[in-house]
Amino acid sequence: MREIIKLRPNTKIIIYTVQNSDYYISNAFLFGASDYLIKGVSEPDLPDTIIRAAQNRCIIHPEAADYLRKEYIQLKNTQENLAYTIRVILKLTPSEMEILHLLRSGMNYKEVAEVRFTEMTTLKTHISNLLRKFDKKSVVEMLETIEHTGFFSLIDSSK
Image (cartoon, rainbow, N blue to C red; front, side, top):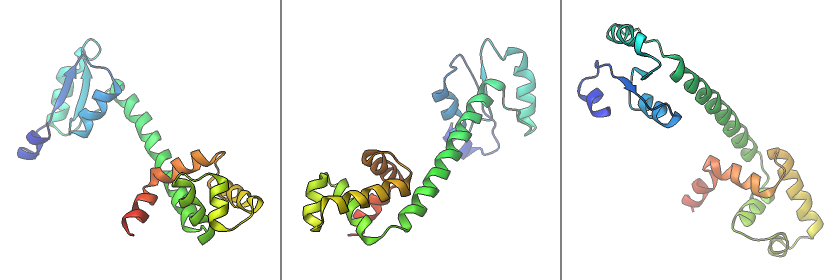
């Protein structure tokens, strides 16, 4: 489908299929489909859909629109979470950054405290502050959130 659209950008592609899964709907639109119709549900709409597509007036059918609406909401939530996480990362102290890297490397609390020459209570205070800043309940959840931003990969590649 991408090749068709690349060769003929004005081509309109309507997917007409029995597949009613989020995976197929998502990929159809990602690859450039103008609309997505499900056999058995959308037959009466097929002629109108073809005419509208030819006129660049596509109306996304309810089956696909429901999926796209959910996907959009999830994408916006992910975007907001990512922006929040990045803002928090940018405000971390050097000590907090070091603790994050040591925890990410697989060290336990005792090992981190030894490497940093700090008391366990001090380390736990730092970790509590990190959890509060990231609004997370566990270190694993916090590290996964940071990993999701690609922050650690960016730092690792700059070394």
